Image 1 (cartoon, rainbow, N blue to C red):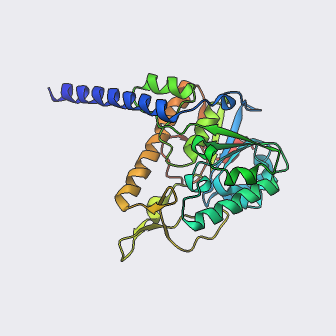
Image 2: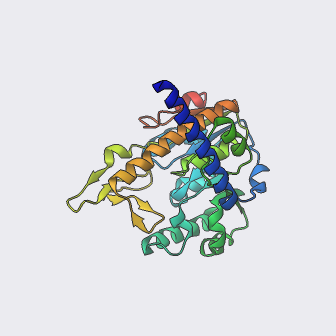
Image 3: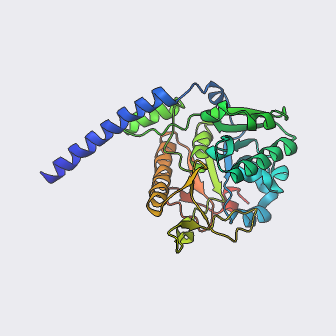
Length: 297
């Protein structure tokens, strides 16, 4: 009896999630025809996260890595590696990068980023941004200075529900698994390039061991990147306007790690292999592989 009730409960949950996803698509998703026309130049792609482990991997294998099709994310253009690697794809989804009604330091940081992208990009590159960024002109005015950059808008609409329902809508590019960090849409984009293999570097995701709560009940963490020396803890922000409580942080992280499992399931349906080549990564969804083995060195 108990098992039957659990099955019925799960069925209604999937029905509710599917219906909710349809409503979100109606109100949030837009046409992304440009994205569907982009094809990879090879049968494999490497996605570069900004975790602290990336520096060692780049310093050890940069000549071999640069010969692959690359996706970089967020503030990668602020590093010296950007002009060396010349990534074909650049993904940025954080709302604080594009909006103007955010805390001043977010605007300052995003202006520096977009100026660097506009100044440094001497090759043709696709820049992927959320549809909501389209109505904000500050960042577009900076990026548009460089004619090598082609802006592609994507739907960040979270789609949940029955697997066949999800996969159908994913294939239509109407949404994706909950995009709680930039690696989720980056992997999703790569999966729709129809490559055979995807490697992940710099996706440490080891924030759990970095979180603490100070004497003022602020939940803080050391958000370390390969290109900086982060010595001070800071809060998890929501849209660049406020900071999350500990329980909200843990819920967000839980959903992000769940999204990786959903992406792995989706990748299997498309017969694409995703390899996590990041030593010590907390992501437990993908098969592990040494980057040298992936590069076949």
